[in-house]
Length: 86
Image (cartoon, rainbow, N blue to C red; front, side):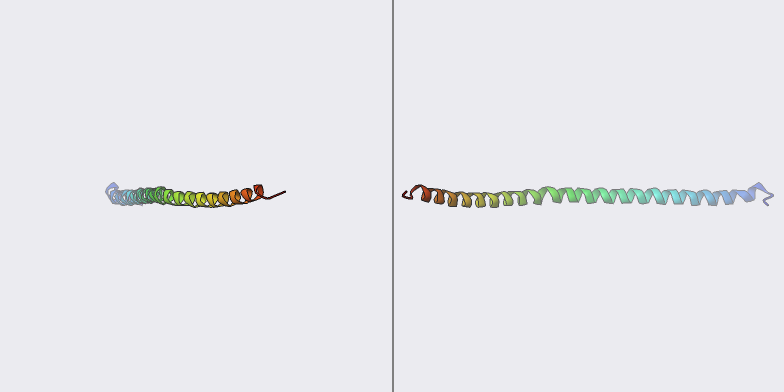
């Protein structure tokens, strides 16, 4: 075994350095991954707000046109029914 305590010190140094490296790599990777996810979330949030409002306004305008078209046709038919002689 190890007879001299001075021989044990480099082994502990190596183990502590390896352990510190593994912990640092894990924490650093988690921090990088989290930062990347936060950036992606911010980009998606921006994309969600801007085009959605334009698409929503376009969709509402199209629905308004369809409703007005249906209304004008119904009014024409109902006026035609009122003017029919009995």
